[in-house]
Structures are given as C-alpha cells and as structure tokens.
Amino acid sequence: VDSGTTDTYMMASLSGPFKAAWRELTGTAYDHQPMSLSVEEIDALPTIVLVLSGFDEIVVGDEPYGDPNNIAGYAGDTGLSGNVRDVVIAIPAAHYMEYDSQEGTYRARFYFEETSGSVLGANAMMGHDVYFDIARGRIGFAESNCDYESLLLSEGLSISTPARGLPRIAAEIVDDMKHECSSTGCRGVMGLFILGAMAIFVAGIRIALARRRAVAECQGGGLEISSLALDLDSDDEGGHVDEPPMPQIT
Image (cartoon, rainbow, N blue to C red):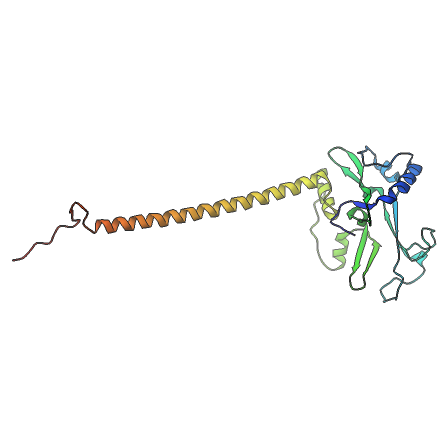
C-alpha cells in the first residue's frame, strides 16, 4: 500500500483473467489508450473489487463486532470469499480512470505489470480511511466520504475553504490537492512552484557571491591605500622627501 504511487499495479499473472472479465462485461478490450467518455459512460464501467484476507488471530479489542453482513467492508455472505470477515475494497471507474483536462480524455490507470506482489496506489486508496497498525503488523480499510472539512469541524478545528465560483481549472486543482495531484493543471502549478523555488535559490547564490566579491575588492583596495600611504611617508629612490626639512638653528 503506497499513497506515493498514483496508480495501482497488480501481478502480471492476473492480466488474462481480468481482461477476459472486462471484455465480458463491457464488450471491449482493456487497454491504456485515451478514451473520450461521458460521465454516464464512466459510471457504467465495472467497479474493480479487491478481496483481502481478513485478520484471523487473537482479538485485541479494536475489531468491529456484530454480523459481518451488517458491517461495511466485510465480505459477509456475498460469495466473494469463503471467510465472511475478509475485507472488500471497491475501486470505481471514477478512481481508476484518470481524466486529462487538456485532451478531454480518460485513461485506465490499473496495471498488470508486477512479477511478484502488487502495489495498491493512491487511486485504490481513494475513498477509504487506511489504518496502519504497525505494532501488530496489520492494516485496516474503511470506506470514507473524504469530507475533510467536516472532519476538522467535528474536532473543533477550522478550515479555510475556497470561495464559490472558482474557475473550472482552479476548482480541478483544489480538488486534486485534496486527494492527489494528477491533473495537468495541478502538475503545471507544481512545476511553476518548483521553477520559482529554483530561481530564488540561484538568485540567492548569485547575491552571496556578489557580496563576497565586493568585500574582497574593498579589502584589496584598503591594502593598496595603506601601501600608498607608507610610500608617501618615506623617501623614494630619487631622494625626494614628502615633507620639507625642519630649519636648523645655529
């Protein structure tokens, strides 16, 4: 489970069965080519369901009690698994189909490339609260409405919400920042931010070098003036004396 990975990567051995099921449900081949789809067509695409082996050891007290059929996230008697307490993760097409706002197309971001093991990326974690129980070597999933504002308010905190009527691109960027920075607009803003930071860093270095150069020049000039003053106070090779000799009293 890696929120730093935008997409999800499953074992290559699952590619054949998945693509066969996809064709049976949609009548089309599963690939990663850009597609022009409406919102209704996106909603009609299959929801990918992952079933994870549930924790089946000593109860420590923080597991949900009750009938697994009445607890969201458990397999229950759905027939998805032989263990009613196995965990079910649903990934709708709105999460695994990435939208490109510039091209107006969608692209599937659910891959089958891993030789061993799988990586559940951010698009699989979207819509879930993920709990890492490091001490017991467990991980938990629970469906979430991802309403961050309500969560903060319930904790007595405040949040600065964007004003209504934001431009479409700005609204996309704000929404991406709540989940993941995946749209072209968001990546463009991030790119400008990085370039700006680099420019400030380079400008700082140039200013520091210029100051060091100025200090060195001032120190060099001071040495030259001191040497000149010493030369003026002494006789030169031609016997010239800077100050007139004092008169002799006889």
